[in-house]
Image 1: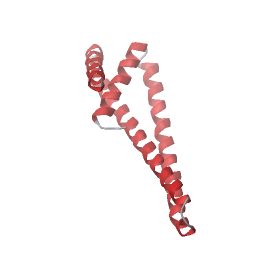
Image 2: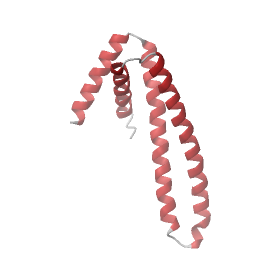
Image 3: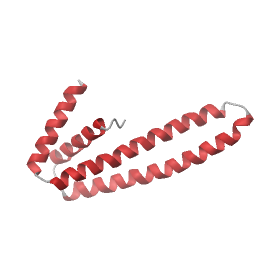
Length: 123
């Protein structure tokens, strides 16, 4: 099933790119996917840190320093992650308003981004 979806996505990308015929659009797809991949990775790091925090909270008082350090890191990651997500949303809004004006183009674009995310193992 996963391979079938990948083939459908690749076909959609090829169709999408051939119909647009634009190297710039391919660059935008790759850039969009890169930012989305970074956002996913930041989110995963945040969740991992949150899990570590929960585990340390159950430990003794000697872990207070480690807990403080992890909370600071988690706050920093949250800020960076939110900025990346906002940037991604702004880019998507601009693309959807200017270049990807039909539902079909939007869906093909998002499928193309998903292919990059799978290729880069960004989950």
